[in-house]
Image (cartoon, rainbow, N blue to C red; front, side, top):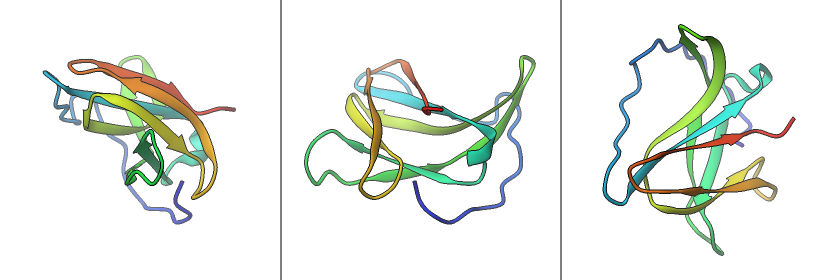
Length: 106
């Protein structure tokens, strides 16, 4: 997770465009509210894989409010979720044409 915060407003239902299909999937990392505005890094599993990040935003839907970072177009494969530059908090498999979910550890 990156150490700086960003100010970003809440997103409403239908405000995130997801690219799904073939060998492309989506990852949603659900977090506690305390991570609002933080960037969470992920990388393909494996040594020295390049990382990408997404901002934790407030997500408002008919079911209520949640907090999540969304990675809208990932190549199918296994990914590592990072707490910081050296600490992994878990891993997740992303399948083409599907949305994978990862819950940030409490």
